[in-house]
Length: 148
Image 1 (cartoon, rainbow, N blue to C red):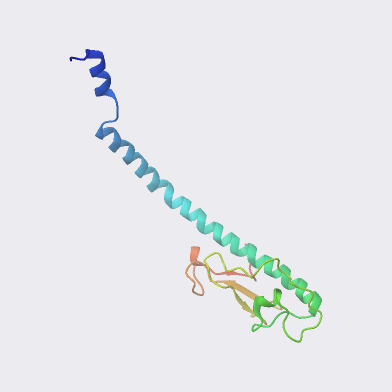
Image 2 (cartoon, rainbow, N blue to C red):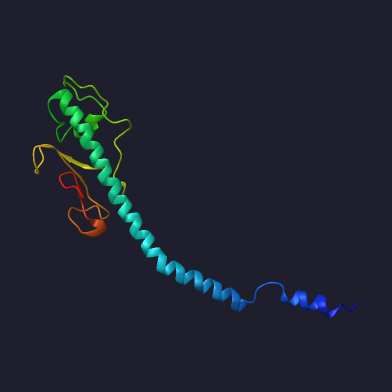
């Protein structure tokens, strides 16, 4: 049976050609190459902001802890003293944080030190993306004694 010409044309025109598909894939690849790095930079900046906010939250809780106990937790007691009463401590009214002590946005524990080296308050540090002291950019340490 011979089909009419109009039906044959419709079948040959249905679907996309290989060249059309390659053009679409190329456009998507160029878009990802241009936009991808910018999105990743935003994610790193968001992690730094989250670390600063967590450190500010610790400082607020440490202030309440000091009001109740007249001192800050020692380096050995660490930030855990905000959730669990240290032995032999009078005046503790905690817990001072609503949930367990979080890790920094890169999954590492915050470094807590009291007495600190930068004033009368404790030092709290997130070692940034690289997990090493110092650094610049996304590897920069987020510290309690500097505000940005």
